[in-house]
Length: 425
Image (cartoon, rainbow, N blue to C red; front, top):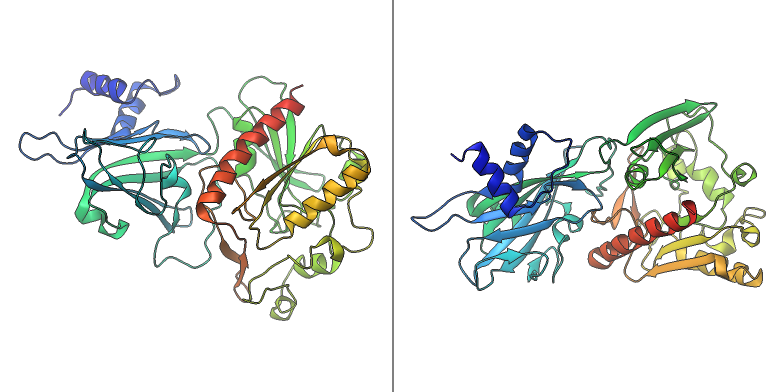
């Protein structure tokens, strides 16, 4: 049994001083167990060791994963497993070969098989997918942003699959992935017909502020706003449809009459709307006969690619792009299988060029990325459930795991830089 002083000394030596000042000694010792794992030893040979630094971090932060005290040039597997809020099991794994000194470092070593290939320091996180046997069409969406995603990382002997974890496991560590940094305030707003959640960064303020709106799935989605607030911006996530506290659907089409934004960010979004599509999808209660009129592709997946094309906008619904008075960043996935993002981006670019406002437009276009470009190091969803009742409807979003992950990492950094430039000025 290692004494307390020895534990802390080992922690600082192997992990570094990663703990923040608000964490007490007891918490530090708890983190030691989750940051360093030792499972077995044979004779006088040191036991394999697995570390994750820091063990507790924001979702958009990289962590360092290393294994040591292993035989040289030996096949091993690193595996990540977690359960979502709904209890569904997600997993990812990579096959590695130890170096000449018997170590594996995900920041420099290459996976030769598994959920991802190559040198991918965060592949165990963005590579997470529903485990075999779980429900079809799962999408990882955090509802309670005040709790972490808890991910167990295992070191296993040989090139094996996650189902062999119990028999092949050499060591395990537990990491926590948070959407809110300590000190962020979460405030429910239910006032004058407005339903939303306000997130305020730590400190006295004043803070640059933004409004966070999602797409036609409706509801109140908070995790992006929580992350934005963790990076120093006041962020207000608004529900404008499909929420139990909304007495009427909130009309946001005239928001420009009372909001004068300093900048805009649009992710795979439209420049207009199709009223037939809106009226069909936004009914308070959906019947099976209604679902038959929902737009579907040849495989039967829900798809807005045709009805949301600029050529199919209803008269008078196209945004007056030529009146744009602030910088706009448009982010699109070139493999978006659900929405005509490229056509909408081209329309915006053409209108602004004709209005001599091209200098206001920035387009980030990502090959291999799909529709659901979200926070970095979170799982990619190519296909998910849109509606469960009266019958299950699946939506095809597109994208491929590795290029989609690269798009999420790159676009998030550029979004924060864009907001910082135009909101803090």
